Image (cartoon, rainbow, N blue to C red):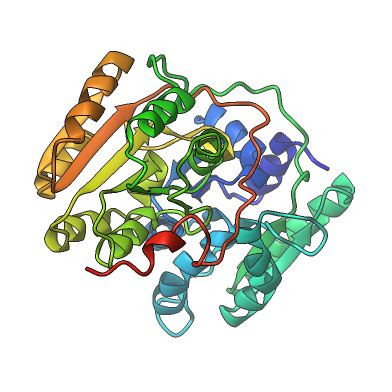
Length: 377
């Protein structure tokens, strides 16, 4: 094990001071330390992992600095395009150093959405010509330091990219407090309970990656309707998945519930929702301004006006609420509406403790949606 501070010192002594990427629970202590030391390190959160690679490439081209790109291994798919068509030696030849949280590795039991990615992580990196260097919690601090130094030297000497693969528990727990706290009245659990109470049992609900699906599962399992699809993986694609369902045989109203981090990851879907959908599509954003599931790192969602964006993307009805009475009124109003509806609910970042992961049949024929599969248009 190692502290986040000592890990960062290893980078600092090698003149690496810029970190850009998408946060992960495996490296949350590292993110917390970097966020609290802005005078020493330049810490940037990007919308998605491919963006992070492009930003890192731009920094390297601009001042010759070697930046570090951080991500969870689930985001490797997002980096493939900029890695092979921007930073590759056959294009601009920009070597980078990566820190990658290795979820689903062979030594750990993990959620189903991480299993396949964990198995193919090293193979993917080798195909991308990114040399993997593995780190785990049983490594001594000296061994960790040697591995980090070896990875950085490889990048600098061989002019090729390398990745430090981080297993869960590598970093010692820190007492650094989350500085991204807001005081909105509603919690995510409060908002989800109100939404669940308001939705007709014949409506279809798609919930986003992370705590939203986990808390929704623990709420809706007590109710009489099971018409829910939990998008436990594929972060950023919840709205696209919902659009696909909306454009299929479904005639009943459909609700998409996702967080601000998920929304921002692939914003390009939104104008296509309004372009192609002519039925009832309720797009609900639970906005707490942070990546809550992986450590509470700040997103850009409180720095922009999501409702103005939704207006630019041609949603038919647009709402933003911060209080329970407002939410109750809007949910009742939404029942009477048709078309594309955008609802931003600004919530605090209090989360339920000890929430179970969904015990869920991941077949598309699961009971959650199977009763609708044979309905005719």
